[in-house]
Length: 97
Image 1 (cartoon, rainbow, N blue to C red):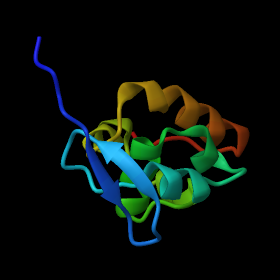
Image 2: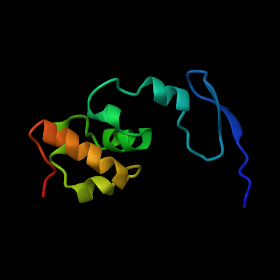
Image 3: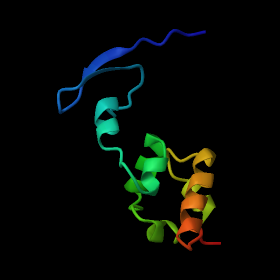
Image 4: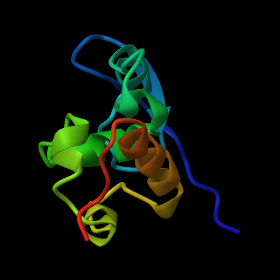
């Protein structure tokens, strides 16, 4: 088993954190920007960023995509689909077929 070495980094806001990958995302900044409510608050940070990076910030915009298209986004996994389906259904919407 390989031992991954974590490197100390500092984000633009001055938060210090350790990362073993090249991912530039600061965990503190990610936690601070997590929504308190709405369907995006139900998702993990990578899944939330996947939708935001593709311009999907509302359920109406989400409903214009199929599940297959959503799963193609980097950071989006199958565990997020039930949460998204439920949020859409509660608002009288669904994924595009």
